Image 1 (cartoon, helix red, strand yellow):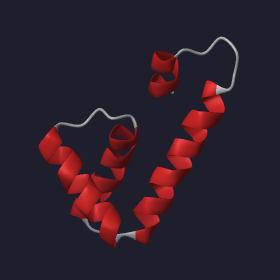
Image 2 (spheres, helix red, strand yellow):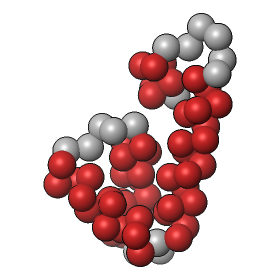
Image 3 (cartoon, helix red, strand yellow):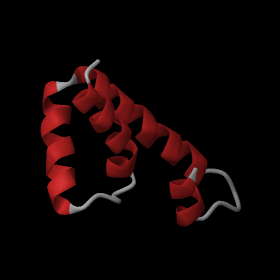
Length: 66
């Protein structure tokens, strides 16, 4: 895994949390189209966020911070 790919993998969490600037978001979206591993990571992170939302007493912000 090259440096650029590692950087993109780290950005996937911010992408899932909708925390990226437009330019960075487009960069990640383009990568997700080409990389099945990162698509799986994004899907897993979305699943975790959804599961955490189901826990009573958790707010949207606390789920994003997790």
